[in-house]
Length: 254
Image (cartoon, rainbow, N blue to C red; front, top):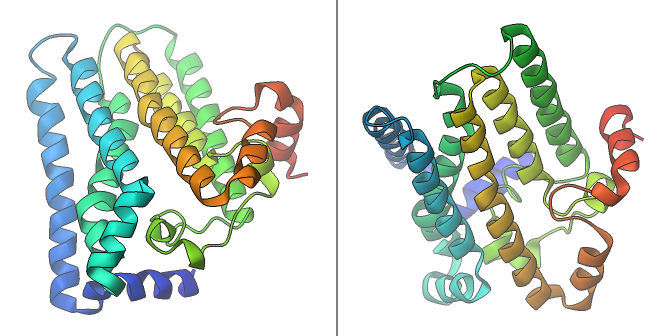
């Protein structure tokens, strides 16, 4: 983790300054505050407003997520800003994408409505989904995916520095990070235990699918047939055709 953090700070040198690091924190907290206020203010108007606000926030996550993966945009930034290209990307795209995506991740937990299941059933199922969220996250790290580098999309700007991750869980699904978020989001929806929360959890799939497909298209441009073969041998989000092997790996780590 220390090595990855050092790489990240090297790409965002503003964080070496205490003052700029503090301003970055204020920026992130400001976006989080705006997201919370957005949900809090508009969700009260009509019963369907949580669905609408979730959809709008999902669009923000989708647009910022898809845009910053575009190779042409990344190269344009690199040619214009050089070594500071990722720093510009981080503040303009990565932070807004992460904040909006985690906003739609947590939002279902705070949505109210008519209860569907008895409390204890909803809680148990919710906990199971949360456990699966944790397990997938552990497998992602185990496979070599590093949060501070891969997770922050540093290699979108500097693809020549990347280490391709395709072993372990990545042999089953190409975007396990999005699967983990989906498991966690549905877990929170089960704990909230109402129809509106479940619809909000389904909406969270929009950026998962669109950004995932966008990433695949960009990787085809970069890796060509290698990535096409990888697409043909794996699932985007959930390995329905290899479900038994996937769950064996997920729960037994083998």
